Image (cartoon, rainbow, N blue to C red; front, side, top):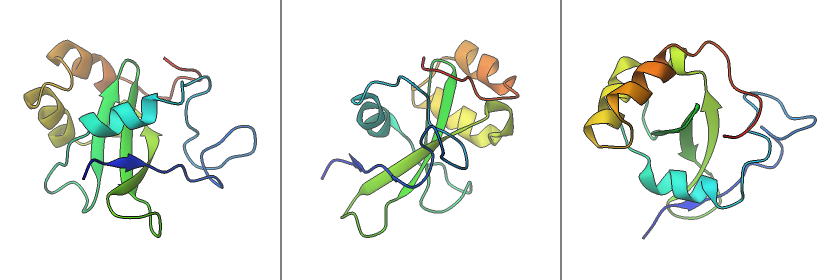
Length: 114
């Protein structure tokens, strides 16, 4: 069964969300596309998936009560991401080494997509 994206409506949404707010102007199809490319990284939190695209890195968790293999995600500052995640994303060809290097230097989230 393919992974499905389920948004978490009370969190991460502009204008009054809390936590890491999802990118503004992100096309509706992008979360599902990113989720399909996401990888699991052993030793970096149980039941987490990781993916990065452009200037953004995302972590996904299972969505309780939303069905089997349903996930919701949130952006993470690249500089806060474990090195094992970057290694896995490069090894599994989700990112190039140059993209990972640029994201490692990130100290705050961009305000808009991409």
